[in-house]
Image (cartoon, rainbow, N blue to C red; front, side, top):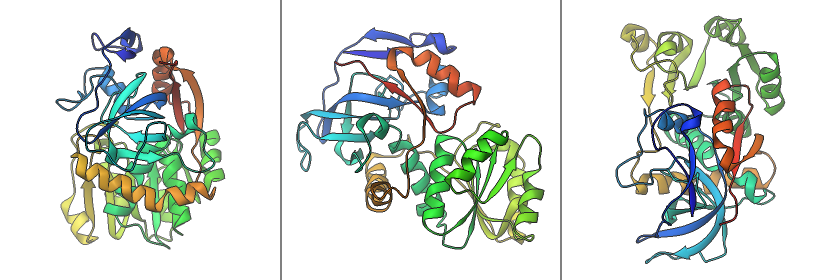
Length: 328
């Protein structure tokens, strides 16, 4: 098969479409012929040499895919050759085939085509596991989403609205904020022109956000704590603004608040399977009903992965950028 390889870390040009060995499904795994994958920020970090895949996993980038099962490994039940699926991956999505633990497979939701389904696994699992399973967002609470126009952001807006929460977002510029509003965001904050702490305070009569989903990290840590409501929960899932910040513990204690931080890629397969099962139970019916929809900015051929990375690095997109694989 062919896959996007990274012979040496570097810029987008470091991504090389090359012939590689076919993966072989191990115990409890299936082999998926990839129809499409999606670009995530983690892929950019891996390309740059800052986020190596876990030991023993595929060396190729790609944390999600959609495609068809072409082989079953030993001990797999509940799936059959020919099933159309999408999957949460530890890596290897930028390829014509990938081996996937069966617990990380999802059926393609009703009403979603196979290519578009590649936009769903990573964002659905990230948002559901963090905003709902970990931070326990409840109806009537306020969620602040940083990067509201991102793939994560567009999913978080829709899921939070679906459960009856109020949603605030930060995004760069009026066009992105307008897209967030179309998806249901109630409070729109242009982080380039406005102070999100002050804007959130005004919009919530001083209460703040009950849950904050943060992709920025250190740069926003102090201001996020300021923006939290009493009993608020800050969930850090990205480090675009750095890894080390100063935390005012007195402010945190005064609000009886919590700072939580997670990654999805490095979790054990059993934990990922539990997240995937929860997503199938709670999120897939919403997608099937049309209440929640995947947001795709554009699709590109997988051989043009370098251009897809340039698009994501420039941050001009809304939702997901997909890569369509050539037939194996």
